[in-house]
Amino acid sequence: MSLARKRFVIIGGGPGGTSCATHAARLGADVTLIEKDIVGGAAHLLDCIPSKAMIATGGAMAEMKRATEMGLAQVDVTLDFKTLRERIEEIEDGLEASVTRLLASQRVQMLEGTGKMLDPNTVEVALNSGGTQTLQADIIVLSTGTRPRIPDWAPVDGQRVLTTRHAYPPPELPEHLIVVGSGVTGVEFVHMFKSFGSDVTLIVSRRQVLPDRDPDAAAILEQSFLDQGVNLFIGARAESIEVNADDVRVICDDGRVATGSHALFAIGSVPNSEDLGMDAAGVEHEWGYVKVDHNNRSNIPNIYAAGDLSGKLPLSSVASSQGRKIAEHALGVHSNRPHRHIDYDKAASAIFTDPEIAEVGLAEAEAFSDGRKIRVTKVPFSTSAKAFINNDIRGFVKIVSDPNTGVVLGGSIVGRHAAELISVIALAVTAHLTVTDLVESLFVHPALAETVGEAAV
Ligand SMILES: Cc1cc2nc3c(=O)[nH]c(=O)nc-3n(C[C@H](O)[C@H](O)[C@H](O)COP(=O)(O)OP(=O)(O)OC[C@H]3O[C@@H](n4cnc5c(N)ncnc54)[C@H](O)[C@@H]3O)c2cc1C
Image (cartoon, rainbow, N blue to C red; front, side, top):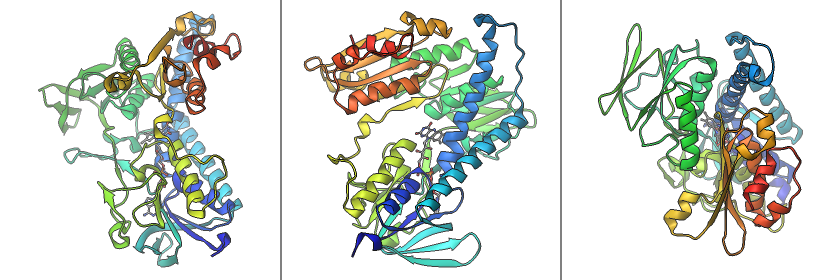
């Protein structure tokens, strides 16, 4: 069969599904994309993007409040909830329209409906407009993403007991929000609502916020939360909840009770796969996630999984990369040479708090627990002229390298624009650059990136 005639059916139009669709179509495949809700992806357009847009609004408010320190007269700032809601809707609509245009420009056929496999080559779509349509496929890509996990004791109503999906923005600004879960999503919501002026209590089941992250970075964030007046319940596991006429109470296993006006659960996610027909198609799965190999292929040779459903690193950037790689693998072409599999250990990630936290590659703690010899260098932003100009000298740049070869293995950055700055270290990690390469790069002065070069010395 020629490339042009290979029929791709992709179920789920998030970053995993849409990047696979556009790339496969560009390479000559005949592509149909099935999406039941919003093209661009539920998690992407309903979580990732609006959460960052709200954090940007909170950040602008914090900037204005600090303006007097920069030599401006006192500025009064209040949150306009209606405008914020409109702004979020505009961003979502704009992005959905641009993804739809891109798909149409590549002649991807779009079907609005819910897809499920009947066998390894047949997909049935329950159309949103009514009725069903059956499609034959040479290649099936499953990219249906995840949804927030809700404990069975939590009466989530979208009004006073929320998941992250109800919070963009919620029906009203919480007077006092209790956030359950202190991973990446939980701390971003703490930061967001604190910057809007809500009181916030964070329930932290482990000994520190961000338990899986660089302890130096987590310590700075924890201190920043304390400075802002966030109540931290460290080492407390939420067990039950009481929703009363006047308040919401979250009861913890150590007897402590957090009392607020609203509660928000940010305790992970579950895969959207129960009705995908995985058993009918013979696809192996674990906890609802498709078991895939390094090409993102399932045990059934013509069925792949992209994005969060593949059970790999749940990031938009990773989902898009997987989608592209799947298109190439299924069509037997590689646009970049030499061809490389995705190295999840080299994916950069960021936490959009104040200060921002970003990491890539080998972490100091990980190397320590593996008994691996590394060189760690760290420079605080308090040595940076640009940080003084920005009126924000918090944080640091840390670089992990090989003590023998000088090759950069990883790094973490805490501070303003950390999510942008980490790209320099990410490139170094992917391209096997050495600390000397970083030291000898002539960065702009004054710029925060100079600290990356200094941390490599
Ligand atoms: C609060 C929050 C913040 C985040 N922030 C970031 C961030 O800053 N940076 C980052 O890189 N990642 C972030 N992520 C993670 C990121 O959103 C996900 O990794 C990404 O969206 C995964 O893409 P996907 O294609 O797998 O799935 P999704 O984006 O979830 O898309 C799946 C799509 O499939 C559709 N679908 C489901 N079932 C069916 C069916 N049977 N038929 C048809 N369609 C179906 C859904 O409607 C949905 O549109 C965040 C996640 C959350 C929860």
